[in-house]
Length: 388
Image 1 (cartoon, rainbow, N blue to C red):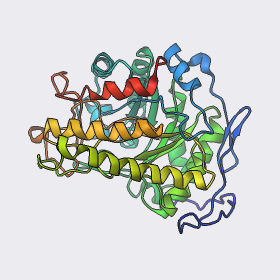
Image 2 (spheres, helix red, strand yellow):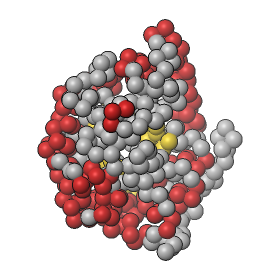
Image 3 (cartoon, rainbow, N blue to C red):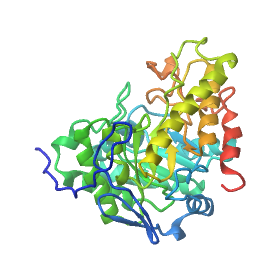
Image 4 (cartoon, rainbow, N blue to C red):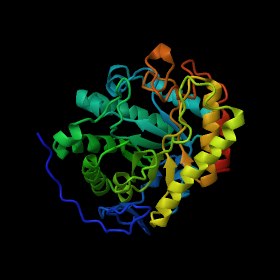
């Protein structure tokens, strides 16, 4: 069954920026909170429900400044026991291990204050009751560990094996089907949310209409819950930028400049690291200037970054180069990803096929730190200062 067409509020044409002429309105910070282009006001969350560290980090965000979330640092997290959403959240869910793996992350990376959690539309479809029960345990673990959360509601990225792509569902199902999942998920959350990631890496203008409807639904039904969309690359395409004002927080995945062949040890070394850093800094700065020149000011976080490699030393140099550039530009960062997992791109060949991103984990399956990856702490110190 095809989903019903929705009537979206018109947006305002803005002069072309570097050849991009598209419909857009500027999201403005209000005295009571923030506002998205659909016209739905997002009031400030009830911070009494947040833990002290999460509250302190949230309150430091300047919602009308591009560097307003430069202190937001942490990781994406996928658990160590499954490769797909239903497997992680239903078939093999382990609440104690979920908490212990995140706790290990905080031991190794003391300035970690935020975690991007991958939820599962597929797990909800398989067993809604069990999914929500397990989700509450995961949310509780993050809260006990004093972590701000960016929960990912849907993903269009699939991976090998596919994690849990929303696939054709967004275009074939009535929106009311998604409302049930979104309502149950947001209702299960006890606080500590920086922003809800509506969808990971949307790539088409067709999915934009669904995402706008989704953003309006969250803002209307759950005021006090900021939204974001995990944009592939820098989101600096007409399709990507058209979603800017449906986000309270702008999150991008700036891998460009440090993409390596996962088995190529010669790709990056200490001798050419500075050259790579300069290039990465330039392309990231170009995107920031593009948004700023269009009057698009809101906090920016790299909700994924740091391309992978099978070689520990090469990967550590990639991390160093990417985080050096992001901290210099005042962009928060959440590398992909904290823990070794059977999920695509987070393991060595012993756990499954390795694709182009290589091995992106910071912590090995046995809980030990991957060599050289404590470089994260250097840049987390710079980004956070004395405040969590």
